[in-house]
Image (cartoon, rainbow, N blue to C red; front, side, top):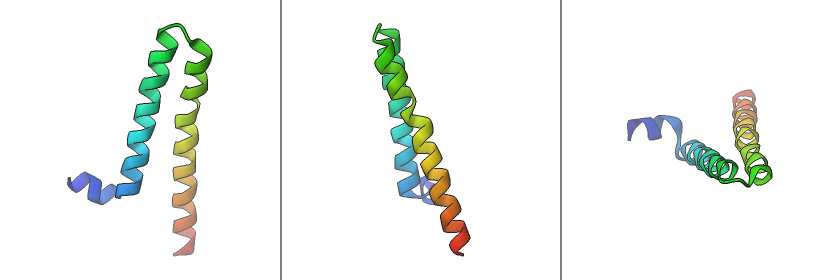
Length: 62
């Protein structure tokens, strides 16, 4: 629980969403639906990039 408080609830939820997206993308890819798996797999790095960008904006404002 200390990890969630230190990270922040919004960041924790975004990371959990990224993990879920990766798992679903792997399932799709390995079950034969390769194009949908690749498409979904590209969402996780995009979300992580948005998280980093928002952190940088917050840091600049301080």
